[in-house]
Each structure stands twice: as structure tokens, then as C-alpha cells.
Amino acid sequence: MATDVTLLLARAEIARLIPTVADSKKEERATSCLLASFMAVPDFAREVLSSAGAPVGKRSKIVCYTEVTFKTTEKGKKPRPDGLIVITNGSKQWAALVESKIGNADLTPDQVEEYLDLAKQYGINALITVSNQFATTPTHHPVKIPKNKLRSVELYHFSWLSLKSKAVLLTSNKSIDDPEQAYILSELVRYFDHESSGVSALTKMPSNWKDTCNSVQQGTTLNKTSETVENSVSGWHQLLRHLSLNLSMSIGQPVTMVLSRAREKNPGLHFTEDCLFLSKECGLTADFEIPNAASKLRFTADFLRRTINISMKLEAPKDKSRSTASINWLTRQLKDKDIGAVSIRAYWPKRIQMTSISLAEAIENPASLIPPNVNDLPVSLEVVRVIDLAAKFKGAKTFIEESSREFPAFYQDVGQHLSKWVAKAPKVKETEPSLPAIPTIFSGLNVSIDESQTVSSAPTLSSLIASVKNETNK
Image 1 (cartoon, rainbow, N blue to C red):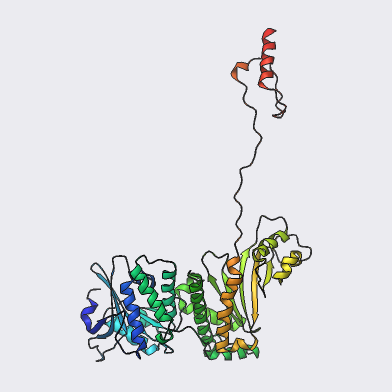
Image 2: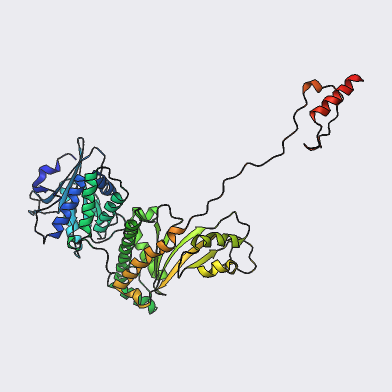
């Protein structure tokens, strides 16, 4: 940046870890605690801000401000963003405005656009928004903003729960070496956990969720561009992020959604493709990546059957001679685990249809999973739990509650016990040792050796010497 952004401020306060603002100003308190933690715990700042395009290195200087007021703008207004982050690396400077919401307050397009214009006017690199709204990734913003507003300023979004999750992972994995910094971060988590902070998890789906469910049940064709479908997909995306963050904190490892490269780079494509899928298939589905897990975890909402399906599909062993051995390889991993309402699905080569039976039946009689007259080995095996929500499926709150309970329960019951098939290392082939070459001292002598003889029946050295003596005496 050509100009030091701090010279453009009319007023600003350094972010305080223990702010002195009134208790009623929850938004200001939460923002101040967060920004102060960035300055006090550099590892936390790097973990968060690097995903917002910030050049945060070990030698970077991070200064954060609250109660920020800029000098009069061209329109005569004095916008007041909630915070400002300034990162200095030598002579280079990177800055971002911060706008936050707490509790049930949502970000609005007008406010976001106003701060994007402000950032552009003062040459500020980015706008970071924070609220209880969820986004698939920091670049996937929950508020639709015209593309022309994003030509000069980057826009990123974090939910309060995602920030808490990053802090939890850093503390639980003992990634902070400095005990004082670790204590500060643990206190930030403790503050976010308290109901008075205004930080909350996702509690309900959009009101349009029920309308979408009713339309599917009534056989009405869904329009991919309708407000009902778009709001339902938006709520679905927030739910997925909510589930991944909660599971991340439960296992102490980052759980992420699996996105194609095109979807990751283009939030609009990610959204429109899910809208299209819902309108055509009457369902929504997503995959999650869990570190070191046997496979991806798939979560599906079936609007027609009013079920949620949770599953993990594993490649079947290729070193077995019988299909039952492949099935037993999987069921042994889940045997004696007291797992209920779980089925095993087998996927076969060629055009052989998928087969499915309960886990209990697969353990008792694995052959019942094999189609008649099929000698091929299965290509893959899937463990799946189907939860029939019935009327709870269309409930804005009950759908969240059931999903939040069943998603981690499946991983605890099934996912954490599964291991992927790994081919055995190849062994060196055993070969019969060849006969040693006849020493040159025997060359020219009339000593006959049958090359077809085995090692055990071949002449010994003593017999060869005896033969040599006989030939010499002749």
C-alpha cells in the first residue's frame, strides 16, 4: 500500500482483550476480544487471517483497532466499521476492515457494500465480516454481493463458531508453545462458549425449508431459481458448515467439506449446482473429509422419503479369493461394537445391481449379500445408516436437531472404527539355486554331468574328484 492506512483514521482504539464497553454492547465486546487475541497469539492470527489472503508471517507485525472512524468520505458520511486489522511486513502493509454481527443479527447487503466502497476509497485490501451466519469457506459469503463491488477489494466471511473451532483445535492439539498465549486462547474459547457472548450455533433452517418439503411431497416440480429452493440450499450450506465445525471440535482435527476445484473457486457455481440438484433429484448431498479416516463421509437429505442418509464407502479388498472373505473383512471391523440401524451395501462390477442387507445379517451370513450366480468380487462396500425423520424432516428446528445428533453419532459408532484396505507388499519370489560352474581345473576332462539333474541328485564335489582321479589313472 502506498499510504499508511492509519493516517487516514479520524479515530480508533487499540483492540483490548478486556474491553471497557458496556455489557449491553455484545458486538463490540466480542470483536475487541477477537482482534486483541490476534495481536496476543500470532499463531491464531495466522490460522485465521491466512485463509483471508493476509500475508501473515512469523515476523509480521499485527495491530488491530476498534471503534474505527475514517475521515469524511466523498459523500460526507463517516462510516464506522467495527474493526481494522493492519499487518506490516517491512515496508509493505496489508489492511482489512472488520464488520461483525452478534446473536440473531444478520449482515445486510447494503452495509457490506458500503464498507466495500469505503475500503476501495482508502485503498484497503479486504473486508472481513463475522456473524453467526455460516459459509462453506471464507470466500463463500452468505450475502449476495454484485461482482463489480469485488473488483478492487476482497471479501471474506467467518462465522463465530468457525473462529472458536480454530481456537479449540490450536489449544487441544497443543500447537501453542507459549503458556501465556495458550491461556489467552483458552479464555477466548471460554468466553465464546458463554451464552452472554452472543456466539451461537445454528438453531433452525430457513422458513422456506418447510415449503420445499411440502412441494416435494405434493409432487410439485421445483424451480431451481425460485426463492424457496435458493433459501433452502442456503440453509443447507450453513448446516453443513455447522456439522463440520462441531465434529472438528469433537475429534480435535479439522473436518472439511469436499468441493470440486470449480466449486471451490466459484461460490456461485457451488450454489447454483446444488439448486439444480435439489430441483431435479429432490435431495441434497455433501461429502466430508476427515483426517486419516477410511473414506469420505457422505451426508444426504432425501426430501421424497424424508430421511437423512449417512454413509462411508470403502474400496473392497482385491487380494481375496471369495466374496464372503471381502465382506467379512469389513464386518470384522464393526463386530461387537453394539451398532444399531446400520446396513451394508455391496457394489459389483459389470452391470450387477447393488445389494444391501443389515449389518447383523452380514455378520451372521455374509453370503446373503452376494447376488445369485455371481462369482466376482465386490468393487466397493458401503456402511450406511438411514434415519427416517418423518414429520421432523420439514421442521426448521427439528431437522437441525436431528442432523446435529445423528451426524457425529454415525462417525462415533461406525466411522472411527473403519480402516481402508491396503494391498500387501510384494514378496521376493523364491527360485531354485543353480549349479555352480565347473572349476577350470576340470576342463578338458571326460567328466559327464547331466544338466537335467536336480541339486539334490547332482554329483558332489567328492564324486567329481574321484572321477578326475580315475580319468588321470587311465
